[in-house]
Amino acid sequence: MPIITAAGHGRGGCGLWGYKVLVGLPGPKPPQFFATWLIRIVINCVLTVLDKRQRLAPDDDRAAERQRAFASDSDDRLDLRSAVRQARSKPFCPGGLKELRKRYANPEEPAGSAPSPAAGASELSAEEALRHKLAELKLRTEELFDIPEAYELTIADYRDDKREGGRAMFVWTKAGEDPIWSKSGKDSGLSVELNAQGDLIEYTIDVEESAGDLPELSVEELRLRAEKFALDHYPGALKPFSLTGTKFAESGTLFFYEQEVMGMPLPMSGFRVKVHRSGIVSDFRYFGRQTKPKIPESLVPKEQLLRQIADTARLDLRLAFLYKSVDDSDKDELRLVYEPTTRWMHFRADGVEEAREAADEDTESEEPAVWLPVPVPAVEAPPVRTAEDALKLLGLDPDRYELLREVEMDDRLTGFVWRRRDWQPDAAEDLSLDAFMRERSEETVKAKIDPAGGRLVSLFRFEEELPGELRLTRDECLDIALGFMARAQPGLAPFMQLRQREEEADSGREHFEFRIGKQGVWMEFDHFRLSVNKTTGQIGSMMGPSVDPAQLQAVEVTALMDEPEARRIYAEALDLKLGWETDYSGSGKRRRYRLMYRLVHKKKGREIRWIDARTGELICSKPD
Image (cartoon, rainbow, N blue to C red; front, top):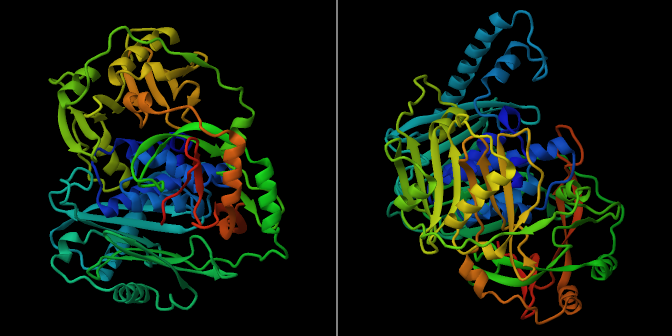
Protein backbone atom coordinates (compact mmCIF):
# COMPACT_ATOMS: atom_id res chain seq x y z
CA MET A 1 0.00 0.00 0.00
CA PRO A 2 2.69 2.57 -0.91
CA ILE A 3 0.14 5.24 -1.69
CA ILE A 4 -0.90 5.30 1.96
CA THR A 5 2.19 4.45 3.92
CA ALA A 6 4.27 7.06 2.12
CA ALA A 7 2.09 9.75 3.63
CA GLY A 8 3.89 9.48 6.93
CA HIS A 9 2.67 9.04 10.47
CA GLY A 10 1.10 11.14 13.14
CA ARG A 11 -0.97 14.27 13.01
CA GLY A 12 1.01 16.05 10.31
CA GLY A 13 0.59 13.42 7.61
CA CYS A 14 -2.56 11.66 8.84
CA GLY A 15 -0.95 8.51 7.48
CA LEU A 16 -1.54 6.37 10.56
CA TRP A 17 -5.27 6.99 10.91
CA GLY A 18 -5.82 7.21 7.16
CA TYR A 19 -4.13 3.83 6.85
CA LYS A 20 -6.19 2.36 9.67
CA VAL A 21 -9.37 3.74 8.19
CA LEU A 22 -8.67 2.22 4.82
CA VAL A 23 -7.43 -1.24 5.66
CA GLY A 24 -9.32 -1.82 8.89
CA LEU A 25 -12.92 -1.44 7.85
CA PRO A 26 -14.79 -4.70 8.31
CA GLY A 27 -18.06 -3.58 6.79
CA PRO A 28 -19.03 -4.65 3.28
CA LYS A 29 -20.30 -1.30 2.09
CA PRO A 30 -20.04 1.69 4.44
CA PRO A 31 -22.89 4.17 4.36
CA GLN A 32 -22.71 6.61 1.51
CA PHE A 33 -21.84 9.60 3.67
CA PHE A 34 -19.16 7.68 5.49
CA ALA A 35 -17.57 6.18 2.38
CA THR A 36 -17.27 9.59 0.73
CA TRP A 37 -15.73 11.02 3.86
CA LEU A 38 -13.21 8.19 4.27
CA ILE A 39 -12.12 8.46 0.67
CA ARG A 40 -11.46 12.17 1.10
CA ILE A 41 -9.24 11.36 4.09
CA VAL A 42 -7.26 8.93 1.96
CA ILE A 43 -7.04 11.47 -0.86
CA ASN A 44 -5.67 14.07 1.53
CA CYS A 45 -3.07 11.59 2.75
CA VAL A 46 -1.94 11.09 -0.82
CA LEU A 47 -1.90 14.79 -1.50
CA THR A 48 0.18 15.46 1.59
CA VAL A 49 2.96 13.56 -0.14
CA LEU A 50 2.50 15.68 -3.25
CA ASP A 51 2.71 18.91 -1.28
CA LYS A 52 5.91 17.73 0.39
CA ARG A 53 7.52 16.62 -2.86
CA GLN A 54 6.35 19.62 -4.94
CA ARG A 55 5.88 17.32 -7.91
CA LEU A 56 3.16 16.29 -10.28
CA ALA A 57 0.42 14.04 -8.96
CA PRO A 58 0.45 10.37 -9.89
CA ASP A 59 -2.03 9.40 -12.53
CA ASP A 60 -5.45 8.74 -11.05
CA ASP A 61 -5.77 5.30 -12.62
CA ARG A 62 -2.69 3.93 -10.90
CA ALA A 63 -3.97 5.29 -7.59
CA ALA A 64 -7.30 3.58 -8.22
CA GLU A 65 -5.61 0.30 -9.02
CA ARG A 66 -3.74 0.38 -5.72
CA GLN A 67 -6.96 1.09 -3.84
CA ARG A 68 -9.18 -1.34 -5.73
CA ALA A 69 -9.51 -3.92 -3.00
CA PHE A 70 -10.74 -1.36 -0.47
CA ALA A 71 -13.15 0.83 -2.43
CA SER A 72 -16.70 0.67 -1.17
CA ASP A 73 -18.34 0.72 -4.59
CA SER A 74 -17.68 1.73 -8.18
CA ASP A 75 -19.03 5.27 -7.71
CA ASP A 76 -16.67 5.94 -4.83
CA ARG A 77 -13.74 4.43 -6.72
CA LEU A 78 -14.40 6.73 -9.67
CA ASP A 79 -14.57 9.68 -7.30
CA LEU A 80 -11.20 8.65 -5.90
CA ARG A 81 -9.67 8.17 -9.32
CA SER A 82 -10.59 11.68 -10.46
CA ALA A 83 -9.94 13.37 -7.14
CA VAL A 84 -6.39 12.13 -6.69
CA ARG A 85 -5.41 13.93 -9.86
CA GLN A 86 -7.63 16.94 -9.42
CA ALA A 87 -7.68 17.71 -5.70
CA ARG A 88 -5.02 19.57 -3.80
CA SER A 89 -5.39 20.42 -0.14
CA LYS A 90 -3.51 20.02 3.07
CA PRO A 91 -4.37 16.96 5.13
CA PHE A 92 -7.45 16.87 7.28
CA CYS A 93 -5.99 16.63 10.79
CA PRO A 94 -8.67 15.04 12.94
CA GLY A 95 -8.67 16.07 16.53
CA GLY A 96 -5.97 18.67 15.94
CA LEU A 97 -6.84 20.53 19.12
CA LYS A 98 -3.25 21.42 19.95
CA GLU A 99 -2.72 23.06 16.57
CA LEU A 100 -6.01 24.92 16.90
CA ARG A 101 -5.05 26.13 20.36
CA LYS A 102 -1.87 27.59 18.95
CA ARG A 103 -3.77 29.07 16.06
CA TYR A 104 -6.37 30.80 18.21
CA ALA A 105 -3.85 31.87 20.82
CA ASN A 106 -1.72 33.65 18.21
CA PRO A 107 -3.19 33.77 14.73
CA GLU A 108 0.02 35.18 13.28
CA GLU A 109 2.15 32.37 14.66
CA PRO A 110 2.78 29.65 12.07
CA ALA A 111 1.73 26.13 12.94
CA GLY A 112 4.46 24.13 14.61
CA SER A 113 6.39 27.10 16.00
CA ALA A 114 7.42 27.34 19.62
CA PRO A 115 4.73 28.34 22.14
CA SER A 116 4.80 31.80 23.65
CA PRO A 117 5.70 32.33 27.33
CA ALA A 118 2.01 32.81 28.12
CA ALA A 119 1.02 29.57 26.46
CA GLY A 120 -0.49 28.14 29.64
CA ALA A 121 -2.94 31.02 29.95
CA SER A 122 -3.76 31.24 26.24
CA GLU A 123 -4.44 27.54 25.71
CA LEU A 124 -7.54 27.64 27.87
CA SER A 125 -9.01 30.53 25.92
CA ALA A 126 -8.09 28.78 22.65
CA GLU A 127 -10.01 25.68 23.73
CA GLU A 128 -12.98 27.82 24.67
CA ALA A 129 -12.77 29.60 21.32
CA LEU A 130 -12.77 26.28 19.53
CA ARG A 131 -15.82 25.10 21.44
CA HIS A 132 -17.65 28.33 20.67
CA LYS A 133 -16.74 28.09 16.99
CA LEU A 134 -17.97 24.52 16.75
CA ALA A 135 -21.18 25.40 18.59
CA GLU A 136 -21.77 28.34 16.26
CA LEU A 137 -21.25 26.25 13.14
CA LYS A 138 -23.39 23.43 14.53
CA LEU A 139 -26.27 25.90 14.98
CA ARG A 140 -25.69 27.11 11.44
CA THR A 141 -25.91 23.51 10.19
CA GLU A 142 -29.17 22.98 12.05
CA GLU A 143 -30.52 26.16 10.41
CA LEU A 144 -29.66 24.85 6.98
CA PHE A 145 -30.97 21.30 7.41
CA ASP A 146 -33.64 19.53 9.38
CA ILE A 147 -31.81 16.94 11.44
CA PRO A 148 -34.13 13.96 12.04
CA GLU A 149 -35.06 13.57 15.70
CA ALA A 150 -33.85 9.97 15.65
CA TYR A 151 -30.32 11.13 14.78
CA GLU A 152 -27.60 11.84 17.31
CA LEU A 153 -24.38 13.81 16.85
CA THR A 154 -21.53 11.37 16.31
CA ILE A 155 -18.68 13.61 15.13
CA ALA A 156 -17.96 17.31 15.56
CA ASP A 157 -14.50 18.27 14.38
CA TYR A 158 -12.62 21.28 13.07
CA ARG A 159 -9.53 21.79 10.97
CA ASP A 160 -7.62 24.85 9.86
CA ASP A 161 -6.07 24.79 6.41
CA LYS A 162 -3.72 27.36 4.90
CA ARG A 163 -5.36 27.03 1.50
CA GLU A 164 -9.00 26.56 2.46
CA GLY A 165 -9.19 28.16 5.90
CA GLY A 166 -11.23 26.74 8.77
CA ARG A 167 -13.54 23.79 8.12
CA ALA A 168 -16.00 22.12 10.48
CA MET A 169 -17.42 18.65 9.97
CA PHE A 170 -20.52 17.29 11.67
CA VAL A 171 -21.85 13.75 11.36
CA TRP A 172 -25.20 12.56 12.68
CA THR A 173 -26.18 8.91 12.76
CA LYS A 174 -29.34 7.14 13.74
CA ALA A 175 -29.42 6.53 17.48
CA GLY A 176 -28.13 3.09 18.34
CA GLU A 177 -26.51 2.54 14.95
CA ASP A 178 -22.83 2.70 14.15
CA PRO A 179 -21.67 4.26 10.86
CA ILE A 180 -19.06 1.54 10.44
CA TRP A 181 -20.52 -1.50 12.13
CA SER A 182 -24.22 -1.05 11.48
CA LYS A 183 -26.08 -3.85 9.78
CA SER A 184 -25.98 -3.90 6.00
CA GLY A 185 -29.01 -2.23 4.47
CA LYS A 186 -29.84 -0.28 7.63
CA ASP A 187 -27.25 2.48 7.24
CA SER A 188 -28.55 5.97 7.93
CA GLY A 189 -26.73 9.17 8.61
CA LEU A 190 -25.99 12.73 7.58
CA SER A 191 -22.68 14.54 7.13
CA VAL A 192 -22.16 18.29 6.72
CA GLU A 193 -19.01 20.32 6.20
CA LEU A 194 -19.01 24.12 6.52
CA ASN A 195 -16.27 26.68 6.14
CA ALA A 196 -15.46 29.09 8.97
CA GLN A 197 -18.00 31.58 7.62
CA GLY A 198 -20.81 29.01 7.72
CA ASP A 199 -21.01 28.38 3.97
CA LEU A 200 -21.87 24.85 2.88
CA ILE A 201 -18.92 22.93 1.44
CA GLU A 202 -20.20 19.37 1.51
CA TYR A 203 -23.43 17.63 2.38
CA THR A 204 -24.23 13.91 2.22
CA ILE A 205 -27.21 11.97 3.51
CA ASP A 206 -28.46 8.41 3.19
CA VAL A 207 -31.89 8.64 1.63
CA GLU A 208 -33.02 5.08 0.85
CA GLU A 209 -35.10 4.86 4.01
CA SER A 210 -36.65 8.33 3.72
CA ALA A 211 -37.30 7.98 -0.03
CA GLY A 212 -39.71 5.17 0.70
CA ASP A 213 -42.22 4.70 -2.08
CA LEU A 214 -41.72 8.10 -3.69
CA PRO A 215 -42.12 8.00 -7.48
CA GLU A 216 -39.07 7.98 -9.72
CA LEU A 217 -38.44 11.31 -11.48
CA SER A 218 -37.11 11.97 -14.96
CA VAL A 219 -33.51 13.06 -15.49
CA GLU A 220 -34.67 16.58 -16.34
CA GLU A 221 -36.63 16.81 -13.09
CA LEU A 222 -33.62 15.54 -11.16
CA ARG A 223 -31.44 18.19 -12.81
CA LEU A 224 -33.86 20.93 -11.76
CA ARG A 225 -33.74 19.61 -8.17
CA ALA A 226 -29.94 19.67 -8.31
CA GLU A 227 -29.86 23.27 -9.52
CA LYS A 228 -32.40 24.42 -6.95
CA PHE A 229 -30.32 22.93 -4.13
CA ALA A 230 -27.19 24.69 -5.42
CA LEU A 231 -29.01 28.03 -5.80
CA ASP A 232 -30.46 27.77 -2.29
CA HIS A 233 -26.94 27.75 -0.90
CA TYR A 234 -25.11 29.77 -3.58
CA PRO A 235 -27.57 32.11 -5.35
CA GLY A 236 -25.18 32.90 -8.21
CA ALA A 237 -23.93 29.36 -8.69
CA LEU A 238 -25.30 28.83 -12.23
CA LYS A 239 -23.71 31.94 -13.77
CA PRO A 240 -19.99 31.00 -13.78
CA PHE A 241 -20.46 27.25 -14.15
CA SER A 242 -21.83 25.02 -16.90
CA LEU A 243 -23.32 21.54 -16.81
CA THR A 244 -20.36 19.52 -18.09
CA GLY A 245 -21.32 15.96 -17.26
CA THR A 246 -23.96 13.58 -15.98
CA LYS A 247 -23.22 10.20 -14.45
CA PHE A 248 -25.91 7.62 -13.81
CA ALA A 249 -25.74 5.15 -10.93
CA GLU A 250 -28.15 2.83 -9.21
CA SER A 251 -28.39 5.14 -6.20
CA GLY A 252 -28.95 8.33 -8.16
CA THR A 253 -27.76 10.71 -10.86
CA LEU A 254 -24.66 12.86 -10.45
CA PHE A 255 -24.57 16.28 -12.14
CA PHE A 256 -21.28 18.15 -12.67
CA TYR A 257 -21.27 21.93 -13.01
CA GLU A 258 -17.80 23.26 -13.73
CA GLN A 259 -15.90 26.32 -14.83
CA GLU A 260 -14.84 26.03 -18.47
CA VAL A 261 -11.82 27.48 -20.23
CA MET A 262 -11.36 26.84 -23.98
CA GLY A 263 -14.54 24.77 -23.73
CA MET A 264 -12.92 22.33 -21.28
CA PRO A 265 -13.73 22.05 -17.55
CA LEU A 266 -11.27 22.97 -14.82
CA PRO A 267 -10.83 20.14 -12.30
CA MET A 268 -12.11 20.86 -8.78
CA SER A 269 -14.12 23.88 -9.86
CA GLY A 270 -17.83 24.62 -9.59
CA PHE A 271 -19.94 22.04 -7.80
CA ARG A 272 -21.44 18.59 -8.13
CA VAL A 273 -24.81 17.34 -6.96
CA LYS A 274 -26.10 13.80 -6.64
CA VAL A 275 -29.87 13.41 -6.67
CA HIS A 276 -31.66 10.23 -5.66
CA ARG A 277 -34.13 8.88 -8.21
CA SER A 278 -36.91 10.13 -5.92
CA GLY A 279 -35.66 13.72 -6.25
CA ILE A 280 -33.97 13.98 -2.83
CA VAL A 281 -30.48 15.50 -2.97
CA SER A 282 -28.14 12.95 -1.42
CA ASP A 283 -24.74 14.53 -2.04
CA PHE A 284 -23.39 18.02 -2.70
CA ARG A 285 -19.84 19.28 -2.99
CA TYR A 286 -18.88 22.90 -3.67
CA PHE A 287 -15.44 23.79 -5.07
CA GLY A 288 -16.02 27.36 -6.19
CA ARG A 289 -14.51 29.49 -8.90
CA GLN A 290 -10.84 29.04 -9.75
CA THR A 291 -8.32 31.45 -11.22
CA LYS A 292 -8.41 31.24 -15.01
CA PRO A 293 -5.26 29.53 -16.25
CA LYS A 294 -2.99 30.98 -18.88
CA ILE A 295 -3.83 29.69 -22.34
CA PRO A 296 -0.76 28.42 -24.25
CA GLU A 297 0.20 30.42 -27.32
CA SER A 298 0.61 27.24 -29.33
CA LEU A 299 -0.01 23.51 -28.96
CA VAL A 300 2.07 20.52 -29.97
CA PRO A 301 0.43 18.93 -33.03
CA LYS A 302 -1.27 15.70 -32.01
CA GLU A 303 0.09 13.82 -35.03
CA GLN A 304 3.67 14.70 -34.12
CA LEU A 305 3.25 13.55 -30.55
CA LEU A 306 1.46 10.34 -31.57
CA ARG A 307 4.32 9.43 -33.95
CA GLN A 308 6.82 10.01 -31.16
CA ILE A 309 4.84 7.81 -28.76
CA ALA A 310 4.44 5.04 -31.34
CA ASP A 311 8.19 5.03 -32.00
CA THR A 312 9.28 5.00 -28.37
CA ALA A 313 6.55 3.10 -26.51
CA ARG A 314 7.55 -0.21 -24.97
CA LEU A 315 5.12 -2.98 -24.08
CA ASP A 316 5.89 -5.15 -21.06
CA LEU A 317 4.53 -8.68 -20.81
CA ARG A 318 2.68 -9.12 -17.51
CA LEU A 319 -0.02 -10.98 -15.71
CA ALA A 320 -2.86 -8.62 -14.82
CA PHE A 321 -6.00 -9.19 -12.80
CA LEU A 322 -8.92 -7.51 -14.54
CA TYR A 323 -11.79 -6.15 -12.45
CA LYS A 324 -15.15 -5.80 -14.15
CA SER A 325 -15.88 -2.75 -11.97
CA VAL A 326 -12.82 -0.87 -13.29
CA ASP A 327 -11.80 -2.53 -16.56
CA ASP A 328 -13.95 -3.00 -19.65
CA SER A 329 -14.26 -6.72 -18.91
CA ASP A 330 -17.23 -9.03 -18.45
CA LYS A 331 -15.77 -10.67 -15.34
CA ASP A 332 -12.96 -10.56 -12.82
CA GLU A 333 -10.18 -12.63 -14.31
CA LEU A 334 -6.43 -13.13 -14.63
CA ARG A 335 -4.98 -12.53 -18.09
CA LEU A 336 -1.66 -12.43 -19.91
CA VAL A 337 -1.27 -8.91 -21.29
CA TYR A 338 1.12 -6.38 -22.72
CA GLU A 339 1.18 -3.19 -20.68
CA PRO A 340 2.24 0.03 -22.44
CA THR A 341 4.96 1.94 -20.59
CA THR A 342 3.20 5.12 -21.74
CA ARG A 343 0.01 4.13 -19.96
CA TRP A 344 0.69 6.36 -16.96
CA MET A 345 2.06 9.30 -18.91
CA HIS A 346 0.39 12.58 -19.71
CA PHE A 347 2.01 15.16 -21.97
CA ARG A 348 2.08 18.93 -21.77
CA ALA A 349 0.14 20.33 -24.67
CA ASP A 350 2.45 23.34 -24.96
CA GLY A 351 5.45 21.06 -25.47
CA VAL A 352 7.47 22.52 -22.61
CA GLU A 353 8.14 19.17 -20.98
CA GLU A 354 6.73 15.71 -20.54
CA ALA A 355 4.82 15.02 -17.33
CA ARG A 356 6.31 12.15 -15.34
CA GLU A 357 4.85 10.20 -12.51
CA ALA A 358 6.44 11.17 -9.20
CA ALA A 359 6.80 7.56 -8.11
CA ASP A 360 9.09 6.86 -11.09
CA GLU A 361 11.48 9.54 -9.91
CA ASP A 362 11.73 7.85 -6.55
CA THR A 363 12.64 4.48 -8.00
CA GLU A 364 15.06 5.50 -10.72
CA SER A 365 18.01 5.72 -8.35
CA GLU A 366 17.23 2.46 -6.56
CA GLU A 367 19.20 -0.71 -7.12
CA PRO A 368 17.32 -3.29 -9.21
CA ALA A 369 15.43 -5.65 -6.94
CA VAL A 370 16.84 -9.13 -6.40
CA TRP A 371 14.18 -11.84 -6.17
CA LEU A 372 14.80 -15.22 -4.57
CA PRO A 373 12.87 -18.49 -4.94
CA VAL A 374 10.54 -19.50 -2.13
CA PRO A 375 10.75 -23.03 -0.68
CA VAL A 376 7.58 -25.02 -1.24
CA PRO A 377 6.21 -26.43 2.06
CA ALA A 378 6.14 -30.21 2.25
CA VAL A 379 2.62 -30.32 3.66
CA GLU A 380 -0.15 -27.84 2.89
CA ALA A 381 -2.24 -26.52 5.75
CA PRO A 382 -6.01 -26.91 6.03
CA PRO A 383 -8.08 -24.18 4.36
CA VAL A 384 -9.36 -21.10 6.21
CA ARG A 385 -13.13 -20.91 5.71
CA THR A 386 -14.67 -19.84 9.04
CA ALA A 387 -14.13 -17.46 11.95
CA GLU A 388 -12.89 -20.39 14.00
CA ASP A 389 -10.34 -21.28 11.31
CA ALA A 390 -9.10 -17.68 11.20
CA LEU A 391 -8.97 -17.45 15.01
CA LYS A 392 -6.84 -20.58 15.15
CA LEU A 393 -4.54 -19.42 12.36
CA LEU A 394 -3.98 -16.05 14.03
CA GLY A 395 -3.34 -17.64 17.39
CA LEU A 396 -5.94 -15.52 19.19
CA ASP A 397 -7.02 -16.77 22.60
CA PRO A 398 -10.86 -16.80 22.64
CA ASP A 399 -10.72 -16.10 26.38
CA ARG A 400 -8.93 -12.82 25.67
CA TYR A 401 -10.61 -11.78 22.40
CA GLU A 402 -14.27 -11.52 21.46
CA LEU A 403 -15.65 -11.47 17.93
CA LEU A 404 -17.27 -8.08 17.36
CA ARG A 405 -18.11 -8.30 13.70
CA GLU A 406 -18.50 -10.89 10.96
CA VAL A 407 -19.88 -9.84 7.62
CA GLU A 408 -19.90 -10.92 3.99
CA MET A 409 -18.07 -8.04 2.34
CA ASP A 410 -18.97 -9.04 -1.22
CA ASP A 411 -19.57 -12.25 -3.15
CA ARG A 412 -16.05 -13.40 -2.33
CA LEU A 413 -14.71 -12.03 0.97
CA THR A 414 -15.75 -12.26 4.62
CA GLY A 415 -14.48 -9.79 7.21
CA PHE A 416 -13.91 -10.26 10.95
CA VAL A 417 -13.13 -7.91 13.82
CA TRP A 418 -11.94 -9.16 17.19
CA ARG A 419 -11.25 -6.99 20.22
CA ARG A 420 -9.51 -7.66 23.48
CA ARG A 421 -12.03 -8.30 26.22
CA ASP A 422 -10.19 -6.08 28.71
CA TRP A 423 -10.43 -3.01 26.46
CA GLN A 424 -12.17 0.01 28.02
CA PRO A 425 -13.46 2.99 26.02
CA ASP A 426 -12.25 6.48 26.77
CA ALA A 427 -14.50 8.00 29.41
CA ALA A 428 -13.91 11.56 28.16
CA GLU A 429 -16.57 13.03 25.90
CA ASP A 430 -14.75 13.55 22.63
CA LEU A 431 -16.57 13.84 19.31
CA SER A 432 -13.46 14.39 17.19
CA LEU A 433 -12.76 12.26 14.18
CA ASP A 434 -9.59 11.03 15.83
CA ALA A 435 -11.54 9.77 18.84
CA PHE A 436 -14.17 8.22 16.59
CA MET A 437 -11.62 6.15 14.67
CA ARG A 438 -9.57 5.36 17.76
CA GLU A 439 -12.59 3.86 19.50
CA ARG A 440 -13.23 1.59 16.53
CA SER A 441 -9.65 0.46 16.08
CA GLU A 442 -7.93 0.32 19.47
CA GLU A 443 -7.03 -3.20 20.60
CA THR A 444 -8.64 -4.83 17.57
CA VAL A 445 -7.51 -7.46 15.12
CA LYS A 446 -9.10 -7.25 11.68
CA ALA A 447 -8.96 -9.91 9.01
CA LYS A 448 -10.50 -10.83 5.68
CA ILE A 449 -10.80 -14.34 4.30
CA ASP A 450 -11.82 -15.88 1.00
CA PRO A 451 -13.98 -18.83 2.15
CA ALA A 452 -14.27 -20.38 -1.32
CA GLY A 453 -10.52 -20.30 -1.81
CA GLY A 454 -9.88 -21.25 1.80
CA ARG A 455 -7.33 -18.49 2.36
CA LEU A 456 -6.60 -15.51 4.56
CA VAL A 457 -6.56 -12.36 2.41
CA SER A 458 -5.44 -9.74 4.91
CA LEU A 459 -4.61 -9.20 8.58
CA PHE A 460 -4.01 -6.04 10.60
CA ARG A 461 -3.42 -5.75 14.33
CA PHE A 462 -4.37 -2.43 15.90
CA GLU A 463 -3.26 -3.28 19.40
CA GLU A 464 -0.34 -2.20 21.50
CA GLU A 465 2.51 -4.63 21.05
CA LEU A 466 4.35 -5.30 24.28
CA PRO A 467 8.00 -6.27 23.80
CA GLY A 468 8.74 -9.97 24.13
CA GLU A 469 11.82 -11.85 25.18
CA LEU A 470 12.93 -13.04 21.74
CA ARG A 471 15.76 -11.54 19.72
CA LEU A 472 14.96 -12.89 16.30
CA THR A 473 17.22 -12.43 13.28
CA ARG A 474 15.80 -11.70 9.84
CA ASP A 475 16.32 -15.33 8.82
CA GLU A 476 14.40 -16.52 11.88
CA CYS A 477 11.61 -14.05 11.12
CA LEU A 478 11.58 -15.29 7.53
CA ASP A 479 11.03 -18.86 8.72
CA ILE A 480 8.03 -17.63 10.73
CA ALA A 481 6.75 -15.64 7.74
CA LEU A 482 7.04 -18.61 5.36
CA GLY A 483 5.28 -20.90 7.80
CA PHE A 484 2.43 -18.45 8.23
CA MET A 485 2.20 -17.84 4.49
CA ALA A 486 1.87 -21.57 3.81
CA ARG A 487 -1.06 -21.74 6.22
CA ALA A 488 -2.67 -18.46 5.17
CA GLN A 489 -2.40 -18.96 1.40
CA PRO A 490 -2.14 -22.73 0.71
CA GLY A 491 -0.67 -23.55 -2.67
CA LEU A 492 0.68 -20.05 -3.42
CA ALA A 493 4.38 -20.69 -2.67
CA PRO A 494 5.26 -22.14 -6.14
CA PHE A 495 4.13 -18.85 -7.72
CA MET A 496 6.13 -16.52 -5.45
CA GLN A 497 9.60 -14.99 -5.18
CA LEU A 498 10.99 -13.14 -2.15
CA ARG A 499 12.51 -9.70 -2.49
CA GLN A 500 16.00 -9.69 -0.98
CA ARG A 501 16.50 -7.02 1.69
CA GLU A 502 18.97 -6.22 4.41
CA GLU A 503 18.06 -6.85 8.05
CA GLU A 504 16.11 -3.95 9.55
CA ALA A 505 18.32 -3.27 12.55
CA ASP A 506 16.53 -0.12 13.75
CA SER A 507 13.03 -1.54 13.56
CA GLY A 508 11.04 -3.80 15.85
CA ARG A 509 9.70 -5.68 12.85
CA GLU A 510 11.01 -7.42 9.78
CA HIS A 511 9.02 -6.82 6.60
CA PHE A 512 8.83 -9.26 3.72
CA GLU A 513 7.59 -8.76 0.17
CA PHE A 514 6.87 -11.49 -2.38
CA ARG A 515 6.01 -11.01 -6.02
CA ILE A 516 3.45 -13.23 -7.75
CA GLY A 517 3.77 -14.78 -11.19
CA LYS A 518 4.16 -17.84 -13.34
CA GLN A 519 7.03 -19.03 -15.52
CA GLY A 520 8.86 -15.72 -15.34
CA VAL A 521 5.83 -13.50 -16.04
CA TRP A 522 4.96 -11.35 -13.03
CA MET A 523 2.14 -9.19 -11.71
CA GLU A 524 3.11 -5.58 -11.17
CA PHE A 525 1.04 -4.62 -8.12
CA ASP A 526 -0.40 -7.83 -6.72
CA HIS A 527 2.32 -8.65 -4.21
CA PHE A 528 2.19 -10.54 -0.93
CA ARG A 529 3.43 -8.54 2.08
CA LEU A 530 3.69 -9.33 5.76
CA SER A 531 5.61 -8.28 8.86
CA VAL A 532 6.98 -10.20 11.85
CA ASN A 533 7.63 -8.80 15.32
CA LYS A 534 11.27 -9.51 16.23
CA THR A 535 10.66 -9.88 19.98
CA THR A 536 7.38 -11.83 19.97
CA GLY A 537 7.47 -13.68 16.65
CA GLN A 538 3.92 -12.47 16.02
CA ILE A 539 2.60 -11.62 12.55
CA GLY A 540 1.76 -7.93 12.72
CA SER A 541 0.17 -7.43 9.31
CA MET A 542 -0.44 -9.29 6.08
CA MET A 543 -1.70 -8.25 2.66
CA GLY A 544 -2.36 -11.06 0.21
CA PRO A 545 -2.84 -10.87 -3.57
CA SER A 546 -6.15 -10.72 -5.42
CA VAL A 547 -5.39 -13.92 -7.30
CA ASP A 548 -5.49 -17.42 -5.86
CA PRO A 549 -3.42 -20.48 -6.78
CA ALA A 550 -6.21 -21.98 -8.90
CA GLN A 551 -6.28 -18.90 -11.13
CA LEU A 552 -2.50 -18.90 -11.45
CA GLN A 553 -2.50 -22.59 -12.25
CA ALA A 554 -5.07 -22.12 -15.03
CA VAL A 555 -3.72 -18.98 -16.74
CA GLU A 556 -1.79 -19.42 -19.98
CA VAL A 557 1.50 -17.51 -20.02
CA THR A 558 2.61 -18.14 -23.60
CA ALA A 559 2.02 -15.07 -25.74
CA LEU A 560 0.48 -15.76 -29.15
CA MET A 561 1.79 -12.46 -30.57
CA ASP A 562 5.14 -10.77 -30.17
CA GLU A 563 5.76 -7.31 -28.77
CA PRO A 564 6.12 -5.54 -32.18
CA GLU A 565 2.73 -6.83 -33.29
CA ALA A 566 1.11 -5.76 -30.02
CA ARG A 567 2.73 -2.34 -30.39
CA ARG A 568 1.32 -1.98 -33.90
CA ILE A 569 -2.20 -2.75 -32.62
CA TYR A 570 -1.69 -0.27 -29.79
CA ALA A 571 -0.34 2.53 -32.02
CA GLU A 572 -3.19 2.21 -34.54
CA ALA A 573 -5.80 2.69 -31.81
CA LEU A 574 -4.13 5.63 -30.05
CA ASP A 575 -5.45 9.16 -29.84
CA LEU A 576 -4.76 12.15 -27.61
CA LYS A 577 -7.39 13.93 -25.55
CA LEU A 578 -6.82 17.53 -24.51
CA GLY A 579 -7.83 18.71 -21.05
CA TRP A 580 -6.94 20.83 -18.03
CA GLU A 581 -5.21 19.12 -15.14
CA THR A 582 -4.15 20.43 -11.75
CA ASP A 583 -0.52 21.56 -11.60
CA TYR A 584 1.10 20.30 -8.41
CA SER A 585 4.59 21.57 -9.16
CA GLY A 586 4.13 24.91 -7.43
CA SER A 587 3.00 26.16 -4.05
CA GLY A 588 0.60 28.83 -2.90
CA LYS A 589 -3.07 29.19 -2.13
CA ARG A 590 -4.31 29.47 -5.70
CA ARG A 591 -4.93 26.32 -7.66
CA ARG A 592 -2.93 26.16 -10.87
CA TYR A 593 -3.59 24.26 -14.06
CA ARG A 594 -1.79 22.91 -17.09
CA LEU A 595 -3.20 21.98 -20.46
CA MET A 596 -2.31 18.31 -20.99
CA TYR A 597 -2.70 15.54 -23.52
CA ARG A 598 -3.61 12.09 -22.24
CA LEU A 599 -3.65 8.88 -24.25
CA VAL A 600 -7.03 7.37 -25.11
CA HIS A 601 -8.59 4.89 -27.52
CA LYS A 602 -9.48 6.85 -30.67
CA LYS A 603 -13.00 5.38 -30.88
CA LYS A 604 -13.88 4.75 -27.24
CA GLY A 605 -12.23 7.86 -25.79
CA ARG A 606 -10.98 5.87 -22.80
CA GLU A 607 -7.58 4.84 -21.54
CA ILE A 608 -6.04 1.75 -23.12
CA ARG A 609 -4.92 -0.24 -20.13
CA TRP A 610 -3.61 -3.44 -21.72
CA ILE A 611 -3.38 -5.49 -24.92
CA ASP A 612 -4.30 -9.14 -24.48
CA ALA A 613 -1.13 -11.05 -25.40
CA ARG A 614 -3.07 -14.03 -26.77
CA THR A 615 -5.97 -12.41 -28.64
CA GLY A 616 -4.79 -8.86 -29.39
CA GLU A 617 -7.87 -7.39 -27.68
CA LEU A 618 -7.44 -3.80 -26.48
CA ILE A 619 -8.62 -3.61 -22.87
CA CYS A 620 -9.79 -0.12 -21.93
CA SER A 621 -10.94 1.43 -18.69
CA LYS A 622 -14.60 1.10 -17.75
CA PRO A 623 -16.93 3.77 -19.17
CA ASP A 624 -17.79 6.45 -16.61
